[in-house]
Length: 369
Image: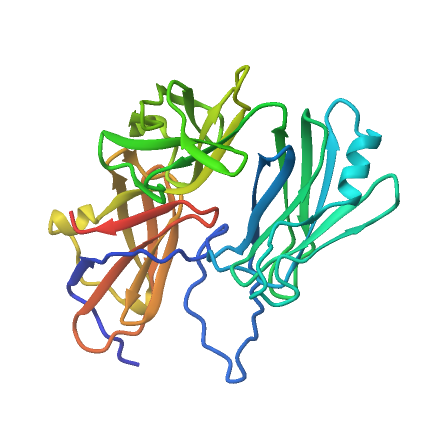
């Protein structure tokens, strides 16, 4: 049987932004079955909540969204609130049993912002129904003290359940922190990056900027990234060395205030994705050392995988001829060692290399050096 011999490889690099699954290794291309495989993919949900005061009452509001940021309307969020110093405080229990909706408009459907109280008499829970934007809200008369709320949603057949905890202090004016603009994709290819946070006081239905507060910026591991004091417009600015932000992948930024005599403690979290560009190089090709080999027998190929922050130590590299994966290997100590196996048509083959980030969410992209 005659087998094609490939005398020369033309290797090119391609941008890769998609995240593919990677565990212990990449499988080689396998023939697809005619009947296919049915895969059910479940999403995740997120509850975001905050508390404020209005005429001596608690206003607890928030939103329920999926992992694509889409609102989940007409869903029931269950909320348990307890006084921190006395979880069975009779006055708090009485106030929760009288909880009611924040919405006073008449143009919403009956279920929007719907609020009802469930559970035993001595341990009531508030169930708030989300509106068309995934928002919920209730108000209740509670003791002016520190409280803890646990919020939960049981999930659906397509989206996993979610829960969140919220601590708040009704004896002091409520503080709302946020990033402006909200960071989402953070590049690690520049030496420094800037962030800006805003501090707003919410009390008795009014909102105003809060100057003179010392805000702390940290990452998901609570590693402090900087401190800054809000100016007259309530804004704090940070310039952070990217080397301190953390490794490539999903993470978060936290801006927080410890609280003082007048203003309650507060924290705001922004989910981010740290990215770094990855360069794929084939030293043998650069030195002109690729020789003619038989692709059906397997052709070894070493690929150097580097980035602006040093060698890449995770993820993997795939080799493609057209749309077919002809080889794949994990990245170990900055090198991926592939074996390319395919049936060649003609005397040369165009091989495309693609970096695939690790499954845990690390996000790299490959570029031509």
